[in-house]
Amino acid sequence: MSVRHPANPVDDAAGTARGIVGAFVAYNEEFRRVTRLAARSFEARDWIETRRNAVRRIELYEDSVNRSVTRLRETLGAQAQDRDLWAAVKQAYAKRIAGFSDNAFFKTFFSSITRRIFRTVGVDVRVEFAASDVSPPDVSADGADVRRYENRGAVRWLFDQVLSDFSFGVPYRDRERTIRFIATEIEAYCAAHDLGDIACVELLAPVFYRSTRAYLAGRIDGDGWSSTLVVAMRNGDEGIVADAVILSDSDVRMLFGYTRSYFHVDLENVGATVSYLRLLMPHKPLAEIYTVLGRAKQGKTERYRSLFQHLEHSTDRFVHASGVKGMVMEVFTLPSYDVVFKVIRDRFEYPKTSSRADVMDKYDLVFKRDRAGRLVDAQEFRRLRFPENRFAPELLASLLEHCAETCRIEDGNLVVEHAYIERRLVPLNLYLADANTEAACAAAIDYGQAIRDLAMSNIFAGDLLIKNFGVSRHGRVIFYDYDELCLVTDCNFRHLPEPEDDYDELRADAWFYVGPNDVFPEQFIEFLGFKPDAKQAFLDHHSDLLTAEFWARLRQRLAGGEVLEVLPYTARNWTEHRGRSLVPRMG
Image (cartoon, rainbow, N blue to C red; front, side, top):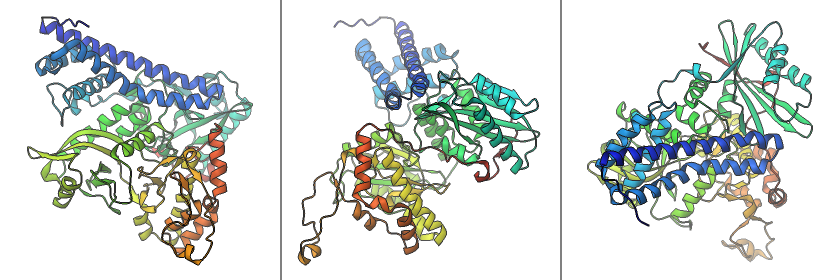
């Protein structure tokens, strides 16, 4: 195929910039098209299609960047490696996108392309936008698409209007009962917390879809107070009902948390909506809000920007993360920053038999699946560069020894070719060592629930040792070691055979055949490591997890295509809500 190379570098730069802008616009239009399909799937109760579209949308960005890089290399030929040309392209591109809202997304896309072309280490500001350039502008929440409803005498009248405005292609099962349920929940909650009269309710016009639920999100305003509000909608056999009214700050933050799959919500102005959500959840990192809205690449960019901004204003050193040292990953952290960094080792210690590719496949699996509130969202980074003097000597030596294929010293910096970054959790084994009996029992029960929730979403953790689980700031047990994770439907759950004689019972190895996918649930008890009270609490609530029958039945249901729900909230009435749900009055 012949390739034409324009003689004028200015034309090259302008044409290339125009093509990249077009590629991002095409990507963004497809992203929004797939996002809008969530409403149709919710109304049709087509949960398999919901999952398929969730994966498709995640894959869109990488597919678009790869196509763009391939096309640019074909079009530019040897000029594709010309940094002077790309510096001119960057300038032309910046001018072309200046009028777009959310133009930080355009910049991130451009940088993704040039980093792929040049395999950039750190940041090359000549040919990519620095994190400060890509940082979203301080967009006012006033630009968010919001519907405001004044209380003109009765909250139920207010929600009569809300339900009229938020209609679906499927009728409400009992519209009047739904109105009464929502209004009663809100009024009772406000009365219990002495919040006074409700002046108005404000809701984002776009509906948030995830898995089998649709959500209306906003706030309640009163005289000098404001409270978060999320209404969860369920489409059942006989129509749509309000499944829960979520008013607790902590519940809303967990709904939008880093252990959940991404929302499908079609936004005209993403930045303004993010600003609005930050008013509702002022302590939630900006990176997590972008990510949970499905803008994972922008979430990564914001985390990178936040991290290196923090490095500039801190002096502490990176150290090994707390917990038992792993056989697959080197894990380190900066004590003053709430994340951990995971780097795959060059070689894995016995008895691990997986490869680097296997581990990366596991993380990719987690990235594309429903995490059920029990798996950390790990962001993948390449070619990071840190000042060498910010690392504790023992950590630096360990990285250079055990991760030499990934880590190197270059011009006074540690270059990390590949790493995962996750929110930092307290390892469950360390949490239990310091916990009182009540807290230890609660953690043991939630550990079992974590295994159960993951299983419902067709995930078997594999390595159930408590060192592989962490505890969040909300006291929730979360799994974070993915190298042995697999699908429940890929496992063969078996009973332990009875030994034929004393010799069999005393043997260190198995006296019976064990297939590569065989799992023996009766052995799970050996992994618990709980003190007696906590162990008993686990058994009281989750003894069925130790039986092959439980897992075999579950496997059969999942293999048959049944979609099992793990709700991202607890459906409860107002008397069980945790704490005051107050945030500063907005606006």
